[in-house]
Length: 313
Image (cartoon, rainbow, N blue to C red; front, side, top):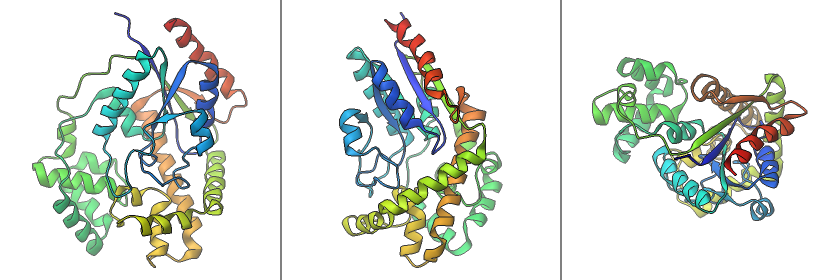
């Protein structure tokens, strides 16, 4: 039987994914599904670049505002939620358009997930305590001894992923890279069109990142974090508060980072995020690449998507 189509639109932060997605939604019978590990959190709007309420009213996005900032969301849950949303969209005679920058979620959707152990709060807390005493570079060195393959692809200060890799080692007694090489779930029953937005000039993307972070600060990112801390029981080990931008503001508000360093640290962290996203795109996901800086970007992507829509009719 012919498989229904699904479109994946992926790219680094500030590459213009949302603008392209909205243009496509205007032209074709598409329904949007967010692929963003930060936009799943309610009340985290400014720092996640979440579409505003007027935009969401006109272009509903699935998988936005799912959970409290006190909770955690996994790639496994994303896969389950995304497949359910896609089935619903397809049943309604429309085409799912999954758009975002959380590359692990795209990989989980396309390839399935290995059977990794569930999170253990006690072990995570122990790892965080050790990291507070020794520093994350030292924890990275420990991971390099236990799981050299995973350590080689993680930055020494990537606390969230280092914590998870060490947690898996301690729970299972086996390196995460070994578990990931095991049997995984079956591929979804869709004919995927994967589109990637990458900048021909990385310096222009960096300028966009700086402008976007400045806009977030001007829009009240610091007040948003203050409000979140008052409304929810948060700590700096939660995934929500480890998100880029939120982490740096938290550090300022906790007195661990001078206020005059916030902008520089936030922009640097966002650039590092974009670098990781680009690496995922080019080395792992390998979509059809479009220059996100091209003046005819929308026309080129629209023409490509039109072939899929026409075939599906």
